[in-house]
Image (tube, one colour):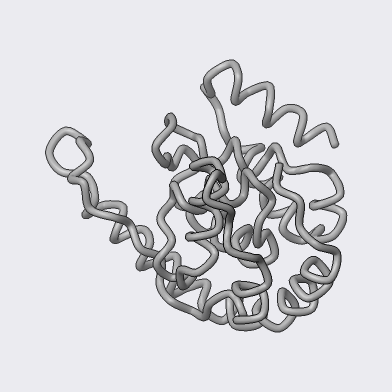
Length: 181
């Protein structure tokens, strides 16, 4: 897990409140566009076409949050370098895989969880590069403190998860732990 300076966390929280209003206004648009793009992404027999799924640009991570991290050292792992690069991308250009990776590292949760829930509402088994349902797994495995900070997002995720059936065993365990929190 990446270590983030406390000042960055405080700025992220303040920024999340401001951005939250913009994200909420864009929900209907985001849902329609994301669903259309996911339908277009799959060709015959559900095979991925290779097209990147882009979420609508309803704002980006504020500059002070994007720029708050130093440049990763040359010897940084691929994961660390990727996370640093993704923080510079506009939110509307992040793919399901990008969101999965950032959420899994607890980066930008105030901005990314609402977008991830939009995707999961339409396609609970949305997948990045790992496996079917990997975005859901990244979201439900966030610490209980995350859901205490954003209880309305936790309730919304609870509704999505409670309606799922026939999940793979590992994802069933993770969603069960989430619901039991």
